[in-house]
Image 1: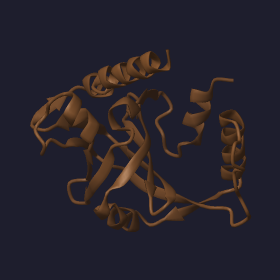
Image 2: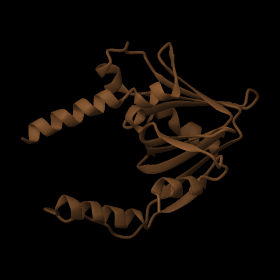
Image 3: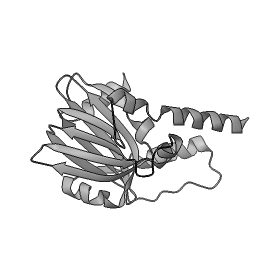
Image 4: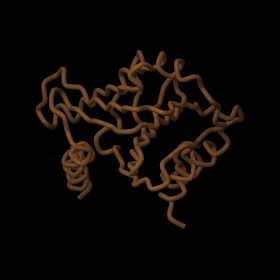
Length: 197
């Protein structure tokens, strides 16, 4: 079974003909610093600060990565509540075993709905982007974000008619935005591989 198709099924209200595009090369480890909902205009604007890409591309310090959804039909957020049982990773645990233990622990967490206004209020201090995926279909778009805030994992899902992307003053196509971070991650992997030799 294709994992990408499983992910689509899990998104409530997602267009059925959606094509998934990862935004993680551009937004991963960046900070979501602001979310503004305009109910009258039916839009949601998300502003990110991605310091390492600003530095890599020699962008001005005040350059922000802005994603705006128009014709917004739904905006939802849910947070993962940690399982209260004991959890520890013994010293000297091999990396693969550590990953397995963490995955087993996280599988016991529970997702709970969260008011969208509460989500927007928590963003004020900036939260780290863990993952970001855009779904594009004939009838609209959906954006799913995973962010780390107050030691919690929060998932936000937006569905709208269209999406626009801007970095600083420059508007980018969806494909340009998707690919913007790729040179950085290629250089990062290359540097890590050379240091492992």
